[in-house]
Image 1 (cartoon, rainbow, N blue to C red):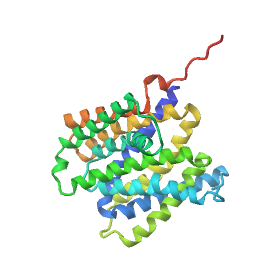
Image 2 (cartoon, one colour):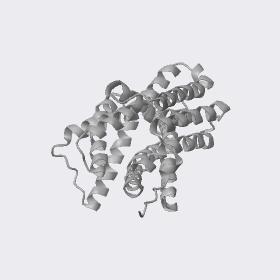
Image 3 (cartoon, rainbow, N blue to C red):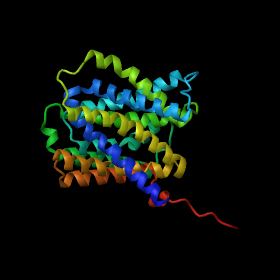
Length: 296
């Protein structure tokens, strides 16, 4: 991996880690559905402009059903669940629960897609569960009303990402940029009716408006472009290491800008979850660099 690729990987993790900060800042004013409809709507408009500049068609013919499914399970539903959970959970907790997505993907693979159950997989699942227990079990957030529902919502959002991984592996191949662009419009279609039924009850502040703008354009539109560029340049496996970096930035942004407490349980829980995720995904540091080709 070149130095510029590693910098781009860090930048992507920092952007996606900041999404939980922006959700926490804006959700109280907008409400979950309007906030996330605004997020995917802004992202869709941004990607439409990029598509026009790059002369990339949307590829709607034959793919509308695919975009609707992907937009629901990879954007609309998990975004909505995370926004709901953000009323009670800190950005730190949200970012670590987000990192359990590969673990949920492994559980779904065993239960519904006939994937083998190995010792490494079982160990990873147990570590992931233990990490979440440490993270939330020693956090004051569990004493709040609706905390259990919020934790379940955030875990459900991560589960949606795991399901989306299985779906995209089995769906007909669609060009990655078209997938991102089409699924954003589909997610907007899913969320707009909910946003109209539950409009904001207060006038957002300028800071909350900026948070929504950054959430849509930076954390979704620009992040997709960075992600697919990295997949193209260094491959899917090294790019997926962003999963391990997002909690680092999620915890850091929450502590720096929201004054969230980072206790021993935050660090221990995050580290345990990431170790479990590494076991489930088969990640090792050697995945970051291409293997040398033999000349023999």
